Image (cartoon, rainbow, N blue to C red):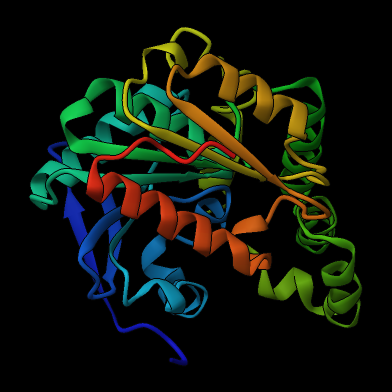
Amino acid sequence: MLVAKYARGNLTTSYGAQISYITMGEGPIPLVIIPGIGDGIQTIEEAAPGYAWTHRNRASQFRMLILSRRQPIPLSYSIEEHANDMIWAMEKLQWGQTMLEGISLGGPIAQWIAVKRPQLVRGLVLTSTMAITSKQTRTIMKEWLMLAQQNKWADFNWSRIAYTSKASTVNTYQMFRPFLGVLGKPKHPGRFERILEGLLYADNHHVAPLIRCPTLVLGGTEDRFINPATQQEMARMIPQARMKLFPGEGHNVDQDNASYLQDLDAFAQDLKRGTTVLAY
């Protein structure tokens, strides 16, 4: 399959903000995905073709809903408020009980959703993410904010590639470096900045222990953006969490490692059977 078929949609909140989403896949298992900082560069509606490509191998197993954060994002909008938006969208779309996947900077939002609406979340997958922003991650995010505020989008995009990709991918992107300023400039730069600002001092230490659903934490041993120790700290906070780190992989483990989908599938089948989450 070259790409997965998808449908775009938009919901309008009571205050007139737009929450864009896409649906794709015809599999039997419902899955909601909360994306990372890429959602600040492009909303899900704008990024739909890319998701149709990267998620094409999931289409036979999962019925996917990928949600964007609202647009516009108010000043000082909290992680919990983003979670409230996505809960509202899931209920509005009558998505029902689902597997929930929070990727990178979408992970803290997914944790809040699992706690606030446990009846909606059958199982939680937290990929390359955190409960508490570490000093290392905060330093990188501040660098990205500075580059965004200075309109240095080529430098930002290269920094993002360097911190989130494994070495072989970084080498591949070298040839595209001169074009990164044009290709990666957000339509709404303020949206990108507000997403980052809301996560600089994220602290879900009081939220993560309240998660009661089976939880799978996946990451890479060479993650330079959210280091493995931060991910392990999060896993220890969650009562039913099991963790697996892929050797030699970086932050984008969900895209770079074919075994990631196998573990996602195995977790989904365990949830379907009601069996204990696999211990890695």
